[in-house]
Image (cartoon, one colour):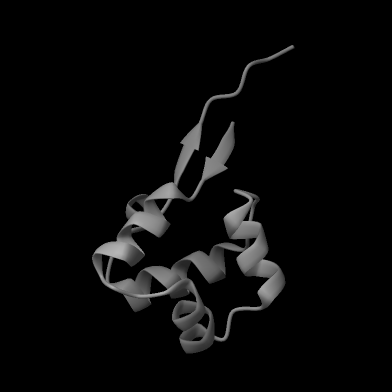
Length: 70
């Protein structure tokens, strides 16, 4: 399984919030923002802060995708 943050970027557009504003308002490290852009795992505490900021549930900002087993 792999995580995908596409829902986060769509929600930010709907709420007219730029990724830069999200990062600054929540004091998210640039490295963490890079991980979000690359669909890499980030700390649950960061995801919880984002959810609180956007007034949403974690399922509104990310989802798990099945991966092919080799």
